[in-house]
Image 1 (cartoon, helix red, strand yellow):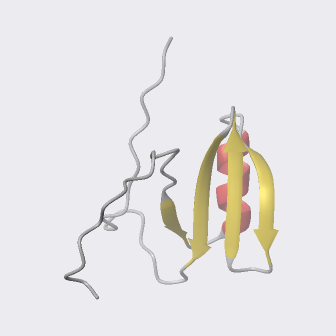
Image 2 (cartoon, helix red, strand yellow):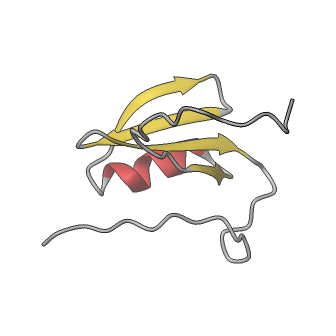
Image 3 (cartoon, helix red, strand yellow):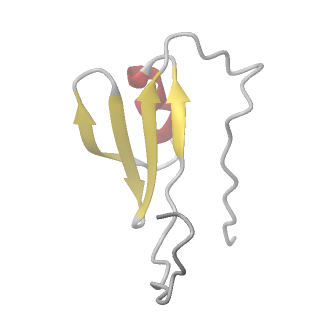
Length: 79
């Protein structure tokens, strides 16, 4: 049940953003310019990109509007 106490805590290994995409082919092309490779693609509805062991996941959502969407991901990088 939800009221049960959690007695062990696992070590967090990673977090992976899952973002909407109106066109998975365009998303792939855009992120390829940033050095990402396709790790997996499932039909026309899910895409996993990877760069330096970091993943970005995208799900197809035809009605997403990049100008008004609140979805986002923040990356910290070194120069």
